[in-house]
Image (tube, rainbow, N blue to C red; front, side):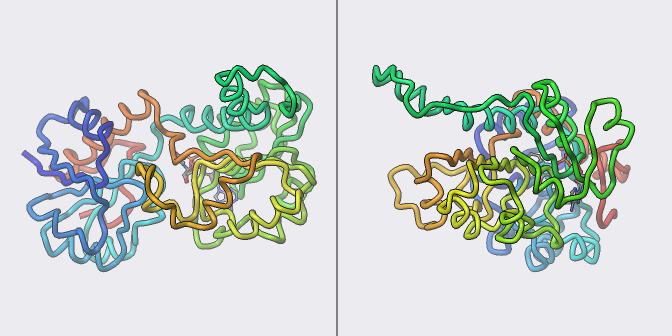
Length: 337
Ligand code: NAI
């Protein structure tokens, strides 16, 4: 039996990991709290730790895990920006992730956010429940014929672009590694970053967070955008400078923003803080705008994605414990021991 310590475990994590296809042979130890240097001691006795997007695996945390005998960090997500990969390699702790579980889940949520924000469905829902059947203030726009900018055409960006093509939008894309055949087959046009900023009516982020793209969208980028642009971010919060975003919203330059991620989401998203005083002033300000729609890192949350995350995570844990590499596509990418 392999012991895996699961941090930041929500009820759905427990349900899907405990019943993971291929998961027998793993003794799951679930913890509600997140993993960081202070909580690493909870991994005592585990060969693997299983973590999510807001667990903080910095050098100190990884060295503590290694000293406890942990040999494997199994991310149950795609993004790995909170793991110090160099520290993991130095400590001979393998790191695996689930690089693709359901790009459709995230892409469909992205488009759902846009439809909700643009057609004000969230406002209409509340109105009608109050027996207010007025349409005043609910005017949206057709997506057909608009220009959508997709930044990052990996798995999620490509599906999102294809959905927007289905709406008959013009789709421009930027990626340092363009998929030219896919673009041609789907009527997507690659362009440089700045021209996309200048012409997009809707701009959607689908690139990973790295140091180079921290605050990719800030004051300078906003100033290049069309007045009234709608921004969609289901990728990582730190891609957008929140303070600059608030200024651009206040000035009316940005027409609307839908976020599934937020740069200071750690400790807020995934938690029930109702009844508490929200300490984050910028998030509080964002929540006051009628043209801002926020979901709490929910884009991945479909049955299909949860099943696939659980299946691949369990497989990664078992294969690494047997000294095998992961199956193609499951991605051991650091410190293979
Ligand atoms: P992917 O690795 O398939 O694609 C990322 C693409 O971004 C690649 O084509 C890459 O060349 C491109 N890229 C890298 N640097 C770029 C830059 N500076 N400008 C433009 N493009 C750049 O990743 P995938 O699966 O499409 O996921 C994208 C991101 O979505 C993840 O990194 C993660 O942050 C986020 N995500 C969010 C979820 C949510 O629940 N909100 C769930 C899963 C992923």
